[in-house]
Length: 125
Image (cartoon, rainbow, N blue to C red; front, side, top):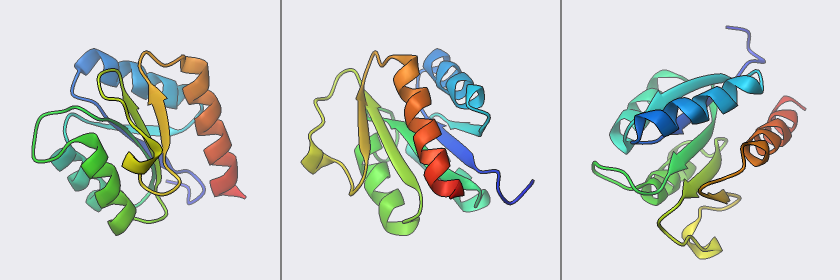
């Protein structure tokens, strides 16, 4: 893998939403990894240092929800940009890790693509 190519980790327990979100990531030209819960996400982050963006749902099964995952990633992998989404949970700025972004479901795909492109340009610069 080229060093200037980085990846996005999408964490979503609904398989169809996971595939849709990964497709959005790939539309921007980025590499997409997927996980169905936080424990799998942590394993992916440990194995793939090229992951520079986490895009996670809030509600999911397992040892932690998406907000706890986001805070854990912020603490352990500070360079990773955090994007959080939910259709069920009202997320406030205080709930989010520093510099995190929130997208309410159903999110417009163009908003996710725009955010990924903006983050990409900041990481590459």
